[in-house]
Length: 566
Image (tube, rainbow, N blue to C red):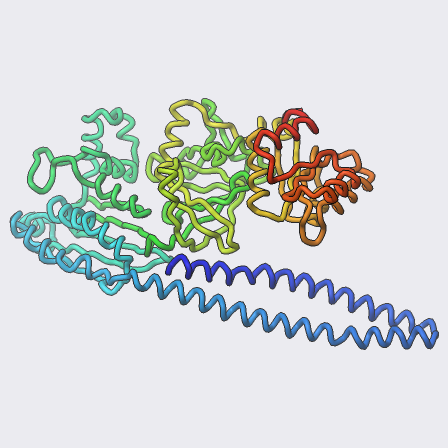
């Protein structure tokens, strides 16, 4: 039901480019009507009765066209709003079937906190707010354990004994709060207590004792950096183990469980005053709010909960140290990593202007992922990848964008592991000058085909061989790209809307600047008349899609323009 509902929403969004096309048509029509009026005024000055009558008739017939177009656009605009509203409501209703109130997963916690505190000789009360907040039933089931663990920690580590609390000027009974709410399209859960918090000096001492950092390094660490150590496996501040704590099994398990649900967890403390845990989760695993970015011409999505922030970075802000590039982020050196290299899509081209950067990770494992462009946020209906592929590295799942194009959703935890490996191997690509020379030396091919599948297959084949590849969706789009860019080869389909491949080849051969451009025609149909038309128009090579395989296409390209590098 969710897949079908998402499909209706995608189909509804197809009306958006149609409206944009009508707006362009409206502007062209306005220019044409203005030209007719100017022509009529010029004819009036000529004093030729026949011309005056003809131009007046043309002017009279053109006026209704403007109103007709206006009415059609108003109808389509209204239809678009209704379809989008119905499709969005349908998705919301399907998701509502999976939702449960937050209270269903936390109703037993108040008694657990009270009983645990009494067994430890303490007094604590749990206050729960946001019990009516709706949560996906799967997420609620998976976070019940982590929430239970955090509340037990609050009682055991945070809340002091009644005597200690009175000595500190606090009420004898400790207060623990659990709050849930929807915020910015996400589920926000906050657990806080008014206990003793965490002693940062004890963390510093434990870090040095376990040889996780030198004494001077530990002394220089900020509060946020020290608190990150609490998430490490086997890291505990308790000297002795008990049934509740001290066994080194703690916040690392909580963090793993939250991350498995595409969420994030952050902690903060005021020593002697309070401890606070903030958990952010998607409202549902079926729909994910994601940031869509472009990497080497491909669209990828990053769950928004995994994105710390997005920024534009001037090339002058880049610094290099030991072949690693970074920039200064409020006094912290934040490393730059090419998304194209991580996803094995080749080397990123040198930026012409500012770099588009997505900051991912937390604490000491924060990195700036450099992408080609940032499209913006979208709500995506998650589609699992078929199990036949196994676990794909750096990829979590797939989805369809609002325009119907497929997109892969990145696994940020995997990305961080891949970045760590590149850093260990010293294999990070440099962003900048080296690519400029590479880009100038690589040969450039334009692929023109109205089939998305064929277009992408040819593009990836040629890209994998080392060529620079651009794509166009039909003959007119290809003709405009040919005139605005320098290409070494044109690969075109025959049957296309607006302008077919034979007409495109004919235009190329007639053009003063393009007539020597090598041209290959690739067609589904091996019709003798198509082959003859293509060769007569000036094509250098004719290949049938039904019979060619990878090497055939690449060998033909090699015959025409040679190796990718000049």
